[in-house]
Image (tube, rainbow over all chains, first blue to last red; front, top):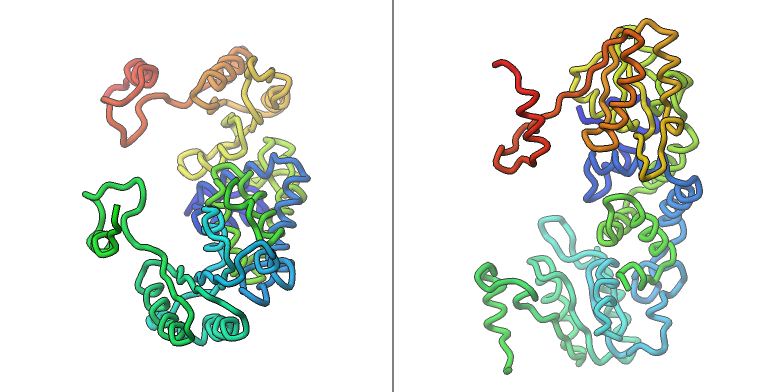
Length: 203
Length: 203
């Protein structure tokens, strides 16, 4: 029986329950947010409620890159300043802001919405792979950067895509793997260290 | 510039901003929740949005104890099984579920909605103190447990209340102070250790 289950208010109980279902928010944190909102200005509470409702109603997938957007084509695809000859392939919409935040990439994106995973029953047809191939056929693309996650599923997906795209005469690259910044060599795992050795570059 | 400020969707941006304002939720966590809700079932998103809206609209303060409730009088005040001769005085509504969770208290509550704090300009008249005194006068109360926080403001409030209530011939008690369970004596602060020594009990 958690604290939220002894309420004097059903409204309080329901909100604690609802918030507890969100990733990274435990019952204590849900309770804290609930009591905060009880005392928050009416306007802030209304705005948050509306923002949550809008997240499903107002967003769609960009018809070109399948990133989340409010419009038919997303802001990145419509931006003439960006390098339209490069496509960075990512697994999820949230990978786009992570890469954008580095400000070191200026091309376009393609969101697969997942990775190939036989154990979870996710095959190539469940991802936006055909849409990517169509895009590569009907546009002048000179580089595809495979930015799937550095894990088994992401690697398998990158391998699969590489085999399909390389024969089209398009340069295919993969994000570098190696030691993450700020860590100590002593604590690096074997796979990371192997990548770091094999991918070593001239100083 | 945080990650949330490079959106391709205004709806995504607004929700990340809104969630980031909540206590204990940083921009990374807000982003994670936002992308989770993007993929969550419509029903769950609707329910959460409604629960947030309801928290202000459906709740009120109990007319007796000033705890948060959906009804005129809260479930605890209406419960005939509880000891109506005891009142536990707390600072905030969220203190009630914390004490209820212990299942070691079966009396009633009184929520002050704050503590006396000259530095923040909060005096006795800003709290539900007059309402508490009225309650003590018009009901047969044999014990008032002062469960304000064990800090300067909470102590000052308990002291103030004690001076008002004791002359009424009502037993006034204070939550025990001492070492918290699971800690090590070595790391306890001086005030806690002093309380532990002064409040020592026969074994």
